[in-house]
Structure formats: structure tokens, C-alpha cells
Image (cartoon, rainbow, N blue to C red; front, side):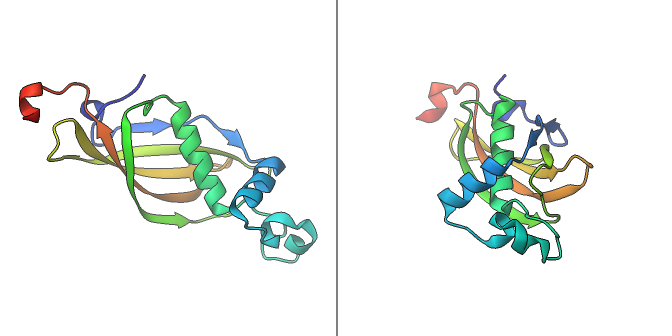
Length: 154
């Protein structure tokens, strides 16, 4: 069920379903982004790195998080805009075959000068199958209000 600005409460938490990072994800992301860094695409090269194996692109995992968040239906048709990503950190590598999921916590809500929308700030985390935080940061989103009194718009 979509959530509107009025539905969010500071401290409220959400989780996404999980998804496994596949070889196809990495290959497709490299093709779309043009990032063929061998740490992502060359298994022999990656063996000689501190990771010992290929890692998924950090931005691929961030893109997967946004897709997983969309699957929850909480933001279906209610997000007007992604305004900012703050303090986003890549803390641990995500490997091909890892299963990731997302967690969010509402940190702040702000009114805007427009009566049909508000700003919601969320702390987001990407966790791997071991429960380790691989990425984290804050998403600042502009979210629709459920109903607007037409007299307020004038």
C-alpha cells in the first residue's frame, strides 16, 4: 500500500525483500555504465586483489536497493523526487552470489511551502546475507500528501 507524507513517522522502520547479485547483473551494469573495471569483470585479475574475487559495482548495489524498496509498494506513485543522497558510504564489498536486502528508518519529516508535498529523510542500509552493513546513507525524498484542501493552493 502506498505511503503518503502523512503516513510516515520519525523512527518508523521498513525492510525490503532480499535479492541475490548475479553474474548477469554485473555484466549488464558494466555494459550500461561502461565500467569494465577488472575488479568487477575479470575473475583472474580479481584473484590478485585484497578481495580475492570479483565484487559487484557499488552503484549496482545501490540501484538494486532502490528497486527492492520499490517492490515494497510503500512509494508506489507517492515519491515526487529524489532530492539528495547524503553521506552514502560503501562499507563492505558485495560479491557475486551475495544476497542483499535493505532497511530504512525515518529520521525526519519537513513541511514544504507547497501544500501537496513534504520532505522525508530516511537512513538506508544495504545488508548482506550475514547481516553485515555493506552500504549506508540517507535518502532525502519529496513525497506527495494524500489530499490537499483546494483553498490552501490559492
